[in-house]
Image (cartoon, rainbow, N blue to C red; front, side):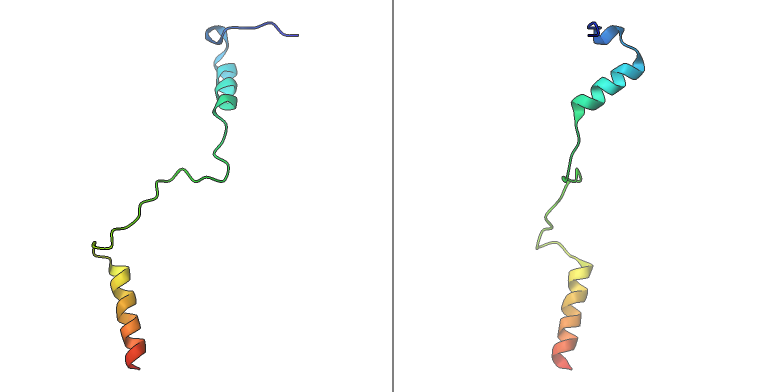
Length: 59
């Protein structure tokens, strides 16, 4: 069994491995912030879709 070595005395590489294990991973979660767009705000894409729908109805 290996002896316990304080984190302060460990090498940079050993500390890096220790912290990597402690951190874990995100799994299936995407760490990108998701923002719900306001319905009141102007959106060119929404405006284009509305124009396309109007064209389809008139044709």
